[in-house]
Image (cartoon, rainbow over all chains, first blue to last red; front, top):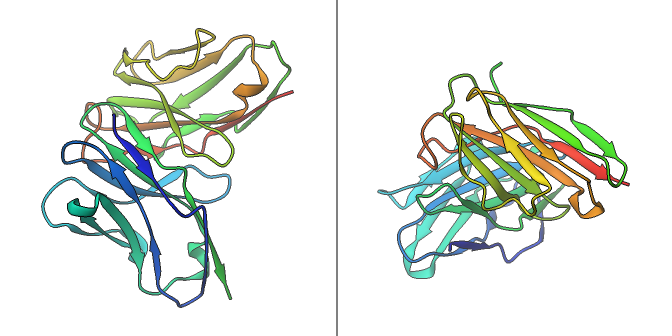
Length: 112
Length: 116
C-alpha cells in the first residue's frame, strides 16, 4: 500500500521568506499526489495535485510543487510566505483506488 | 449549499453512548468519503461510498462503527458504545466522479468528537 512521510513536524519561517515543505511517498507505480492545507478548526483545502504530465505543478495561493520520481518526493514551495499561510499542511498520495493516504502533517508558523 | 456540510461541529459523548454524525456532500457528487483525524495526525481513511453503495469499509476500526448513505446523498456515520479512543475529528469529503480522480476531494469542516 502507498504511504507518505512528512519529515518536518513543525517549521517556522519569517514573513517574506521562501518556504519548502518536504514530502516523500512510497508507491510502486506513478502515484496521484496532493497537498492540502488545514487552518485551525477547518477542513482541508486542496492546494494542488499531480496526476501526470509536467512535473512542476502550480496551485492556489502562490504555491507550487515538484514531482521527482527519482527521489520519491513531492515538495511544496512558495517564494514568499505571508502571515496568512500559517496553518497545517498535509501531503497525500492516492493509488487509483479509493484510499488516499495522508502524511502526519507539517505545522507552519510565520514570524512577523 | 456550495460546500460539504457536517453536523454537529462539536459533540461530547459519555463513554458508552451512541453517536451519529451527519455529512451533506456537494449536490450531485457521486463519491463520499469518511476520514478520522486524531489530534496531531493526518486523516485516516474510514469508508467510501459511490452513490448509495458502500464500496470500501476497510478503514472502519471496529464493528462499533457503521456508515450509511441510503439515497446516495446525505451520509451518516454512527459510532456505538463510544470509547475514549474514538475521540477525534471526523471529516467527510466528496468528489464528482467515481473514487479517486483528478478532481481531488472537497472536505467539510469536520465534527470534533470528544468522549469523556
